[in-house]
Image (tube, rainbow, N blue to C red; front, top):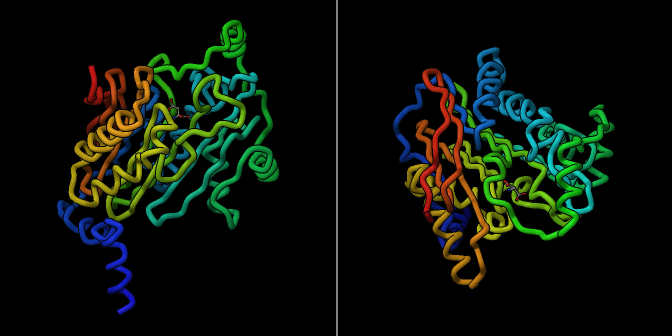
Length: 323
Ligand code: ASP
């Protein structure tokens, strides 16, 4: 009885079909693993993740290794070490991680630690909480043995000083074609996981948090359905609970491509409804389902993503809504 009324309540909320619809994905996954990662830097990160998986790591281990590669590369200017600062000249990092069972961990606005995804994993595995912010996140990271570093590289400092001359905040579309790293994947047995890591919008207000460390917005994994991660204008992804929306779409029978497209269409509709200028906005989603199908969709052209499986390692351009 209790279960029936619980399902009825979920039904009223439009959520009931998740478990039932997940069974619709009948095609058994027979791959040896699959990774999907935002932007060009995903090619290398996917390779690192793949190697970790082949060495016997879990999907989560592989994703942590793949994202860490990007976080530690000072040449990648939107993630980890070398990420662009906020308008006060402080590099603050956001990240989150989620496994197939619904375990989650997140850090927001953390300074001085180059590998926020690993800190997010430690939050997930070693604390009774799911999210730590600012000083508290850094304090926890230091207690866990993560090194304190200066994350600002010379190029970021020079660009920030140039930006200060006008100090005009404008979300930038497709910065050098690479922003947040979001990686979702599956091992040979179909166990899903995902991670997302970023320095956020360049020259954001100090204290601003985007979608990337918010479970449901920048990342969502449902072990019975699939996974999704987002990149781009975080405020809009939070507003529409973007990644959860995509996974929900897949649970209700949409393909990953259709579910990503539907989420982008919803974002466009929210903009229209609110009468806001969205000429400087880019948002992209990537998704995969339990059957090993993949999909991606963005608001505008310019979003690409890397895919890696046993017989595939390539960069694909996402379809998009607006020219
Ligand atoms: N989604 C990130 C944020 O809003 C930025 C990005 O992916 O470009 O912080």
